Amino acid sequence: LRKRCPRYKEAIIWYDQCLVEFSSLDTSGQINYDDNFCMPSAKNLIGNSISLEERLHLLNNLTKIAVTKIDKNIEGIKKPVLYAAGEKRLGTKSLYGMVQCSADLSVQGCNECMLYYIVHFQECWESKQGVRVLSRSCNFRYELYPFIRN
Image (cartoon, rainbow, N blue to C red; front, side, top):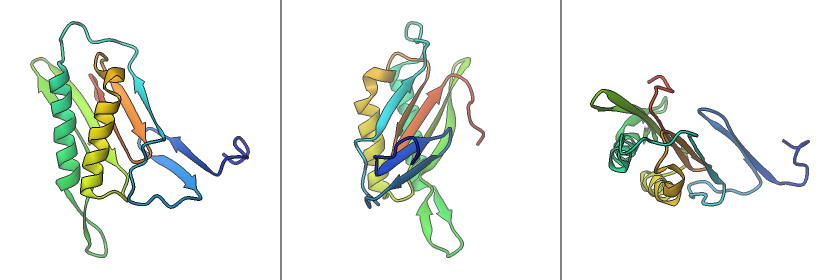
């Protein structure tokens, strides 16, 4: 990164299931509204095969799981996992989804981040079969095929 971007003081690389960030700024616990993008599937939904409400329902349910499921670490501190993946059966089809918030966010911050990006990028993904929305603070994905193991 430093070779490719020598004049920049911060950078983010997104991978399939994680991100790497370096920065001279301390943004712990704050939602980053600047570094984000939406990668929709090239394929559009046909008709109303999976409604916007069904996709929103899956993302909202996964966000609730992410902020309520407790991770017990070695020191005995209980923290929400801030991650969830699952599926929603829709007749003969399934919709697969994943949500994730950075570990420095609070439960409220995770909820706010997810809601912001669901609304902010709605035009990007509302008619698509799948999408990845990535930000420094939270991300989500849904597809018509399984893309992650639980």
